[in-house]
Length: 436
Image (tube, rainbow, N blue to C red):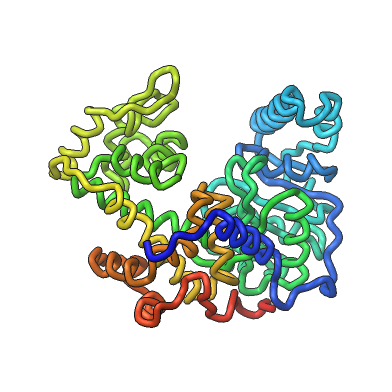
């Protein structure tokens, strides 16, 4: 490393970054806020139910819509169970469970959302479905209401295009479990109005979230950087580095979970169906063997009743058969450089494209949404710890065909000048017509 900051310096940076994220240039207290008194949620599944709890918990009446009664009942049942569990742990009085549930109205038609001031769509990631829903919302919901999507990666400009009021459309990307995770990526689309941004930033604070305003691009800030890490993790496996060695290196770096541990926890069959041939044949093969993660006690790892993962010879054999690579070893430092330095490069690209307001906002996203180790400050802060020259050398050595993983101009400039990642200033978040 080129620098080793003290705990106090890291703490001061994180505190300053967190405070700065709330500041949106051009939008301040003088911008009128839209009154939000009622909230509508489309989807009572894991995300929709979790999102709804943020609002019901602070007093908002919530209308939650599902397509079938059993799905609605199941979703509201999960919400009640979550509240009951929290009350039993002493987080609030037991009698509050009924109070909070009393703020819910369940419905089987989006017509019930007509008078809501804010509507959040939380269905699965399918553009056609989301466009269909926003077409209906445009017809149903009163003028002046904010129409939000919880998409984690899709183009919000395309979603907004099917409405007659794109200025009212914004992305509110909650992280799962949405009733617990603090981060909220607020995604400003090309036509999103200033007062919509201001209102949702204020709402985020009211529901006890840490908000970061970002722009529209595939995966936004957090998931776009995560994709670069995952791509490199998969590339290492194809070179013979076993999944548990990749995870162990990231665990040693400070992440509680590596990419393959995360995949097993989430379930390998997300987005997969029997017989499917995806871009990840290793995952396909594991799922076909009913190795679908922790829920089947086998995925990349084998699991006992304690849910602790143990390296699996079955998985190792599948990897050998698919990749043709013999198991190889790589030092933890090399693995970290291969996985983390591309994350920094992608973060720099996000800044070049003006999809983040400031470099420190990227660190806030990763500290609060992805478990980045606090002692390393965030991808940009860590980039300054290791230096731009080291990051550039690794990116050049990777020689990736993926445009996202090719060294950015700004990275080259920083390496030449000795500049800092945390001081990158490309002019802030820029969108289209609705930009501040």
